[in-house]
Amino acid sequence: MNIIKKQNIIISNPETKDFLADAFYSETIEKLPLIIFVHGYIKGTKTGELGI
Image (tube, rainbow, N blue to C red; front, top):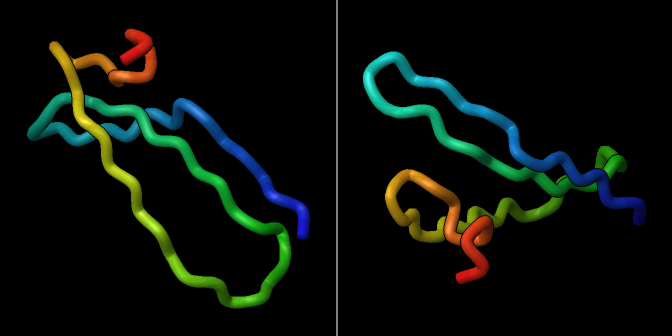
């Protein structure tokens, strides 16, 4: 199975601040479970960018 990785996708909402998202998915058409991982933010920055 080949995994496609897209990072730092900017998602905009006129009512809130923009935020970044990462997506990992298989290029096959087989249905797979959906997993959503949410992590914290510090002062509007992804925690991974701060090495936390």
